[in-house]
Image (cartoon, rainbow, N blue to C red; front, side, top):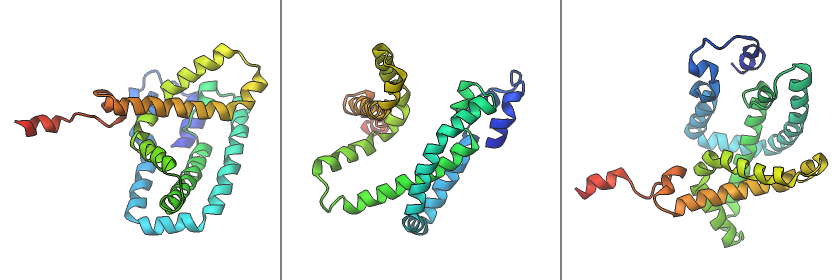
Length: 211
């Protein structure tokens, strides 16, 4: 499917197609593999955990190599395939799919290491920070675009040279995460905005129980 989306769909007239075929990013079918993989990992958790633990070095180094390779993928899409910038940056690509699998696996391994050391020496403030982040994680997923827009306004206002924009990328990434975290935390703490991050302070079920 991803091969067709990348190499076939850009050359077709999609104006007469149904909404979900033209805007496939909204279709659950595009993400079905991740749902199936999540279900498989849940059912066979012990075997899945053992696989991640055994092959974590290969998964980790492959993640680094594939991450660097996204730079080549960018120029390949733009200059060789002649794709638009929007299509070039799109996540629905075979290469990005493979990269996703490895980085998800590596993040799972990091999570397993955190669980191992959480009660054995990690500072309490860090444990609380991660615990709160887990509660507002869905909100951060939903609000990342807003955080990116806010930081983009700041970066645009600074008008830094291209070289400095590249050098400060790690800092910008940290700022985006911090803004997203803070925004989601505020919604989580302040009623009635909890529903915006998937953590409503009030539930409809309480109305029924009150009766």
